Length: 352
Ligand SMILES: NC(=O)c1ccc[n+]([C@@H]2O[C@H](COP(=O)([O-])OP(=O)(O)OC[C@H]3O[C@@H](n4cnc5c(N)ncnc54)[C@H](O)[C@@H]3O)[C@@H](O)[C@H]2O)c1
Image (spheres, rainbow, N blue to C red):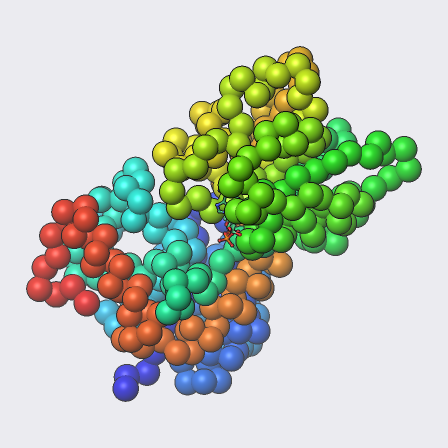
């Protein structure tokens, strides 16, 4: 079998400080015989020198375009718009299999160049469970921001931080009023993260998952002060909140954080807003009387780049060590071909 050459690329998005492989795991890869090239990246949370010390080769930012054809390019988020034809196999979150804007263009670039997308969202075990995900930290941050907003301590703009510093502002202070919180999707990764952050904040949150929402008690939902939605909806369900619930004078609910952020999707369980919030404007007031604030940020784990990268990398490492044509990576490649067929993106002879 030919030796694996992984190429860890720079992330073009300037706020993205995370990485899918941290230096300690890079060392495990190089010691196992994997060639690992790491691009220089000014904002990556781990300096390039730590990768060099772990036996990695160093390359300029963006030089993956001229990497050997058999190198597998590894990243997290979107590629730059050029080159128009992608000749390599790329591992990252493509967000291109649910007919998102730009999906056909991205897949078309792969098929034009004979490359392939191995989408991290579809890296699953043989029962379909995700093998590497950022959910826990998304939920942790979602609940943390909701608590800070509710207590009047959410400073904007948000900037990447470290867990110890976040926890220091999250812990309850003398004089803080008690409040109740509800996490929906509580048994999932994000839900567990949200519940954990509430605990740090001194709040024992109510936990609902599928069993508790089957026959939704909206009065009980509206009776909580803070709501964190962390469900992964795969089919349409009745919404948890409707416009008329926001106008309900008896509503106790004051702060909502939608970790799921399915805005615009037919599966959206919170169809009461039409655009996400962001680091500059993390919270938006949906109602004045009684007040209701929304937080709906779609890149929450980037706010804790070190912790979220370290956990993600630990989950991805065994998969990278087992990189090959079958198993989880084979399923990923099959899913890419299926998505190309669904979007009518023609694949040429050279597609791997
Ligand atoms: N905002 C962000 O930055 C960010 C980051 C990562 C993930 N996410 C999103 O967060 C969501 C959750 O991700 P995850 O990794 O925790 O998923 P997960 O699969 O680990 O957990 C989802 C949970 O939701 C529950 N659920 C599904 N439908 C439900 C319903 N109708 N009622 C109650 N519970 C229901 C499931 O049973 C499961 O326990 C996803 O939509 C994901 O895309 C957002």
